[in-house]
Image (cartoon, rainbow, N blue to C red):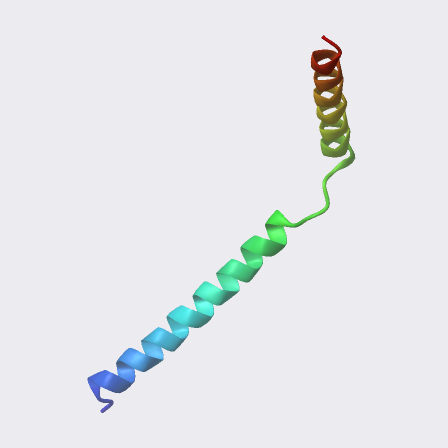
Length: 59
């Protein structure tokens, strides 16, 4: 039979590998390429902000 200390380290190794795998999966999901619709929305928002800033500086 395994000691409680050995079981603890095996459990910690499994939890650690699971946490690492989960964090890698999440980073891959979050860093995906944006769709054309998302790019267009970002471009529109950028143009709007620049236009507002230029209008404010012209005053």
